[in-house]
Length: 401
Image 1 (cartoon, rainbow, N blue to C red):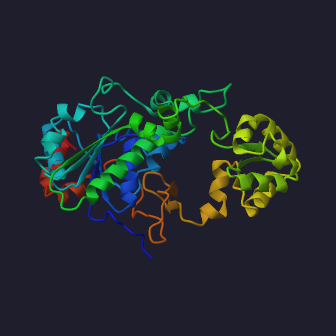
Image 2 (tube, rainbow, N blue to C red):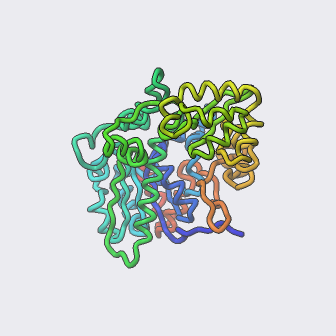
Image 3 (tube, rainbow, N blue to C red):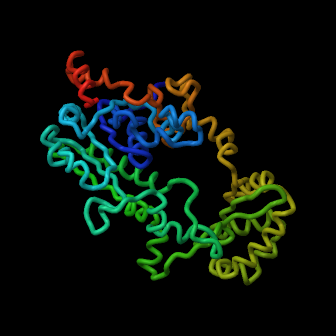
């Protein structure tokens, strides 16, 4: 069975750099859209120079680039030159979507803003991703994931009371911004009988806040600012991370019956009727004492054993794993989350990437090509736009491509 492609026939222009925008277009490409990556001649997406492999960075095929650009085609365009702008407008005329993550105002100063480009494509979906949005007093400030994590409140509730604030260990703000953009773009493309353009303004700060639902709502509705709780759950106890004889274990005994089942599995049935723990609210008030008693029991066996026994009894439990460990888990390894391309040009070896975490009709999404070398499809795309070989040579001589 081939991978379903619900966005087949849609063309997306990806003008983005590093993570939020490329991650957005990574989703769209795997859902079937044709994604053309428009890059700066000579250097391209900054992510081409980022990652744990120095040699790949120098070859402009950094791991950070490889992770989220499979299936895209690359054209290099100098958008500061008039010839480059002319090529770009011709690209836009045949595109359904444009995604950019420049600072607000950059595209307008280039003469390529939304109001100008919708003249080339009257039903264009234009998505601008930025740190703080296209208006407001902070619109012109630079923003990276670390900045947004700090300003959004994420860091203030990450870590334990004596260690917070901590940043989340991966670029969660960039990722959420990219997912938010992909969702909004897909919604715009799904509009029936739409003939007018759409301008989508994605602010990473707001995207992150929108995903912090319970934490934000506890303040907005109940007047209680969220606090860092380490690995504990704000709504239930015992629900968190426990040491075992070998390895760490997360459990989520959020329901009364799950708490009672956990006590019986741990051979601590007396805790069920203990007035300190008998009710949900009592367990929250006495979570430290309960955790100490349960940890004492957990130390009698290892995390693998407890995980199996608790899950069998209906108590959600899972070991704390490293990235290599979780990728080797049969549940993950067997569902097609990792896609591998053989002997990728510009890399010289196989490249494996993580695809979007969804299955459609039982199939994980796939793309047909590995991440491209910088400008690899420039000539091909120009020919598709109707440029002759002589015109392409002139564009190259002028530095437009």
